[in-house]
Length: 195
Image 1 (cartoon, one colour):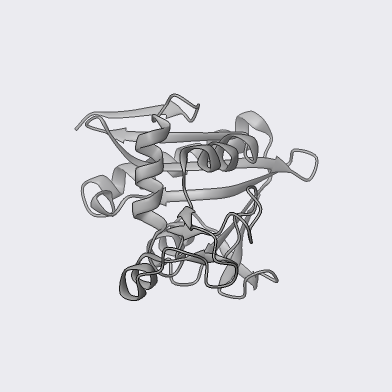
Image 2 (cartoon, rainbow, N blue to C red; image 1 turned 90 degrees about the horizontal axis):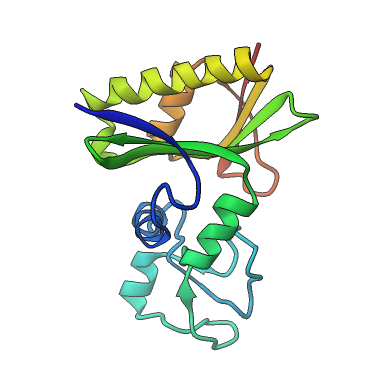
């Protein structure tokens, strides 16, 4: 098994491929990030309002916004994905296993640079089980220690959906503690790891 870790830069995973991966990963419940209304939702708004899931669109044949009638467009288009990943967040890495993207994280420093907010943590379904699972766990554990020791990070913070069982399990394995529900989205909760 060949494991390669690369910094997450715009060319680490081509945007078209990344757009396809994000769409496949997030288009169903609990996110429902398949299509959105560009008239009701601002380009830089990545929240759940005016967003429609794959099942809802397929079952009801929704192609236009039920509120304003505008044509719905892909939630994770290449240009929106670029904005979300590379303009909102500043650091991150991708794990490739045998040449395929297996897991990634993306985040930004907050609180004067002492806290790293992990905005995106993803492990693709086919890499959540042994033997890949142990590779991903070791990688994340090493990264947490590296950021703590080399970059002076004393606190890691993340937020995840309550139904995201595999990410919640990984956060627990790394020592994160679930704190409170998110005010903006009560179906998500915050997790913290402090040194």
